Length: 258
Image (tube, rainbow, N blue to C red; front, side):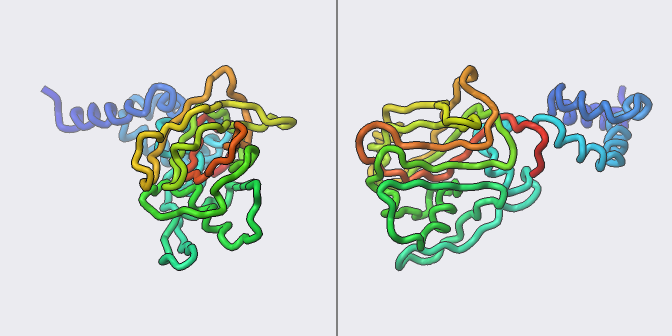
């Protein structure tokens, strides 16, 4: 027969163990053996007392983003989920203003379009469209239609990342024809290919619908540390490039701060 406190300690240990051995082992190295032996409640109290030390230590370790929902862009915009992602109103033409997600300040977005439009009115609009994962919003634009090979969307991060996979959706226009493109990373001297496509993953959907997210995995042998990544149109034909909700996942290398 276990007492109430013993049962509670067992439950606390089970929830703490869900973090995984790697995280648990590193965290408990900051706690004395005596506090650990007294149970999870005392160990947790000791960890809270060391929060400043742990805060400094976390940025000196690698940080791996798992899953395919919340990646590097989400981490930058929300301080690793500690706050809400800020929104802003964006407007295109006669459409009503939309509350779209604001690109995080630590993220550099570079868009190269060929042929380029003479108007830069919608640059803020397109930046929100690229990072916003809400595919139900009407975030289209003629400046992304019929672009030549070599056009691209680039992300610049304030740290180095070894990419494991990436994810993006597509707008209502031209999804089935988005066939020839590459995902590349910059090694300091040149761009290197991490993924190449010859066929669109959205060919069977009704043409007036936004295309849902698709996850693409990088070959581990090709991955390397970089702070710049881009989606670039390849092939020989013009294509639409309505990239929506572009997100990158992988291991963030120290030193880093979000």
